[in-house]
Length: 160
Image 1 (cartoon, rainbow, N blue to C red):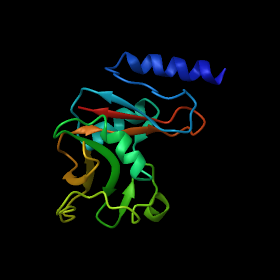
Image 2: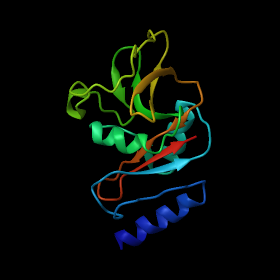
Image 3: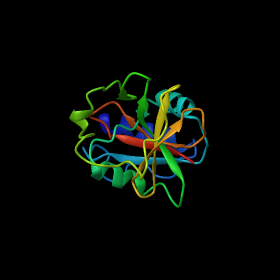
Image 4: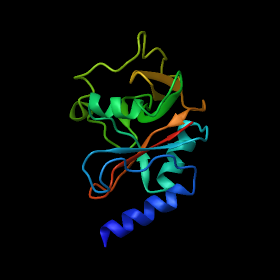
């Protein structure tokens, strides 16, 4: 029953510019990625993903970053769920304990990043090399999101 629900969900997502769903087994604990060809701001990307029962990506280790960056080609960037709300860095899923996601244990920032001061909310994107860059949230970029239901295929969508 659960696998039929996942299949139906993946099929419904395929009608909205889906290019790749669940490259591994549908209910694998390994995260999988979805790529969309629609530019969006960070807020628009987060809203779109949440409308489809996803959320912006919480990258827990360098393997997640590497897997996601394979969908980001050339000099393109993809939004991830990391943002600075002017008081602290946090993830879109509400996680503020960045040590639990190994945030401080591996260096993913591009050279000279982060380079913005928190005059307003700052959002983070990832490039094809897996490096992170801080951006103003109202810029249009790709987006990465993940499914919040842990027993289903954990997906990440990306907008281009």
